[in-house]
Image (cartoon, rainbow, N blue to C red; front, side):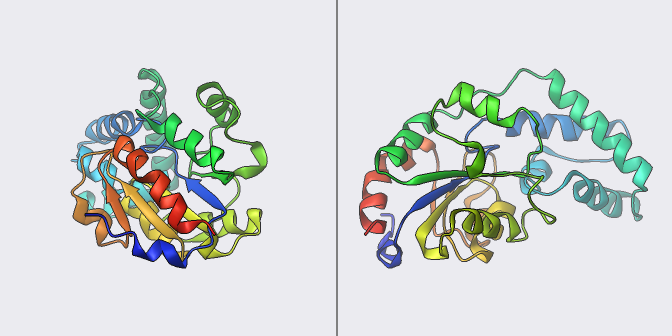
Length: 235
């Protein structure tokens, strides 16, 4: 039984969606790219490591791997080179498809008259075009927070605080949909009710210990509860 009692305290106006692992099933590609890039350097890095660090900047991911495996920081030149290798590998992989049932989730939110924002650490210049191709008439350019809008990425609360600022919302007027521990931590630190959808390989405890209010296993499961969530949270 899912406890949704805390929703009664909300005055819901908007949903904030993460992108990788929420809108698109892209985390397997990210994990493969990171593991391959590090393997070429003799650094052991697992898919679980990649999922745990989702939302972290590329530089921070590389720093952590170097410190843990090599006992030193990576140089700026090493960071640039490794991150380029990672990105090249990622771009060579088949494009990730939308997460099953996420379009229905977005349509349900829109039909309820709620604003929809995307809050992502991605810096893809073609991001809006990609979103509009797969989810037409759902997202708008002014309702996006990307890597270009913030100085600090997740798990810092800045991305979600920026979304609140852009929409002139209070923290109790939004719900976040996340899939990653660092994204959950960011949203919770911003004071926003956070739903985690565990679309990857992580244990649920990785999400709950970072503060997720509710955890679902699939977008289909979220979709089945969404009308109740909106009804409880929207005044």
